[in-house]
Image 1 (tube, rainbow, N blue to C red):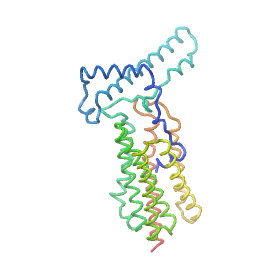
Image 2 (tube, helix red, strand yellow):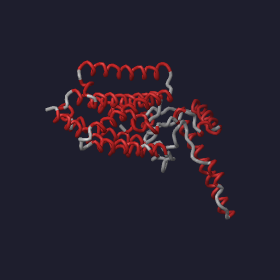
Image 3 (cartoon, rainbow, N blue to C red):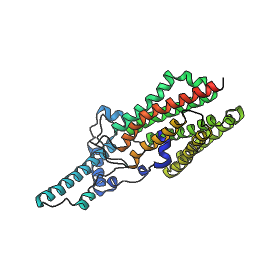
Image 4 (cartoon, helix red, strand yellow):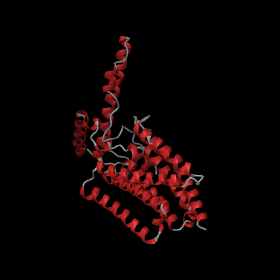
Length: 327
């Protein structure tokens, strides 16, 4: 749910581009020298680092990232020291030239127990909890709604899968983990649009329209994934497809709210959408990580944990209401 609303307005694709840090000559020379040295003398990695698929070239990139960051911090300290000695204001223009840098689209993070982004990985794992709770404690509410309830259970399963891969991706950014993270997020967004269409428009709950709609959404998703995986992993193309799917999702719920003024919980549906978009502001106002651990992206993941609990409570209320109405 949070990924969907974020994609509508705030999807950021900076991960696709070379960053200032890894484009610097200092970093490139450091990595080249480190890789050569690693061939002569293999690097030392802990068991945890090997468990998270770290190897010598990847470790070289990590160590050189910190070498460049160390140089940056020394330059920042020097600017402040000169200002103190000369008793003049800090040269903001000079200071700006030494602003924090990203490497391969990511800020500099401490690697802890082999995990690249500990905070984002943990908060992603926390987002899995409300999804599991739906299966463990509220499964009966979903199945009482019949076909529509099972459709929403598919969405819950897709969301749980997405947060598993988000946890893994933030723990260790590799091609396979990145793609599975993107593919899983895409599945969640597609399934939510599919479920909303079936839930909010009774016509699509009939057998033939339901099967046709399910086939078309599955075809849409599979062809999208095929293009990304086998033709070209194009971040811009993926963004456009997900934004269009997300806009359809939101439009369906807005139409539902307007058509059902008698539903006492309709404003809660509107509130959760605005809340999730507000949480997405963490992505818009991106900032370097505090203590090299907690950045804006990780705080976005943290903020969506309670919002997921709220969203699922609304969904359960909605399913109960619909079930009573059909008795």
